Length: 126
Image 1 (cartoon, rainbow, N blue to C red):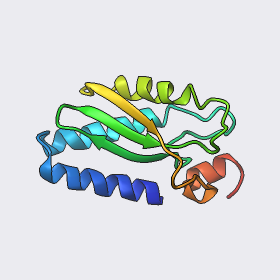
Image 2: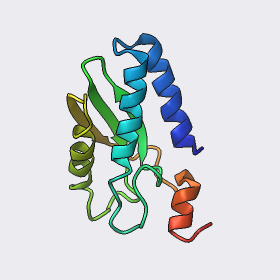
Image 3: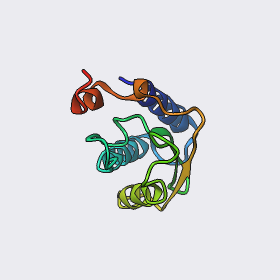
């Protein structure tokens, strides 16, 4: 499990304790949101943004709005203007999600050590 996966699962567990959304529904939403994120690929790297470690935070609000903090492999990435829309469309299609707010962050900067083993294999680094 990558650091990102561990952080997202810990945040989801903490959210379950105080969420108005029933725990089983919150777990389903979390799984479905992660699955949706795994359909969005960085066009320059043959791996999805979740496995690359580009997703820093996922918050599911009580009104089912999903707030995502994510980054890019580099601030000057050619798809910087398009990537948030791709993420918004993918997550917005998840059943039960009422809206999506994607925020691009560059602190901390992305580094290859955020990649999962799956992503490392995909790019030939493992």
